[in-house]
Image: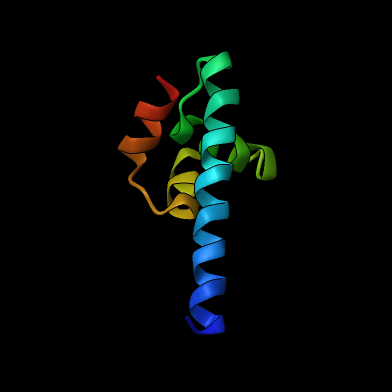
Length: 69
């Protein structure tokens, strides 16, 4: 296995483990992964409109509305 493939495999493994850990924390709060992503974006841009949040997250404004509901 080349060094590049090894590094890619390690990064993928890390990402999977990180997601599982985060999901355990989120399960305890009742917040879904997508909602967490939105909350993090709002924390970085507290005055952003729904349209701006949608643009930043590369989703539709309707998707943001569903996340909030």
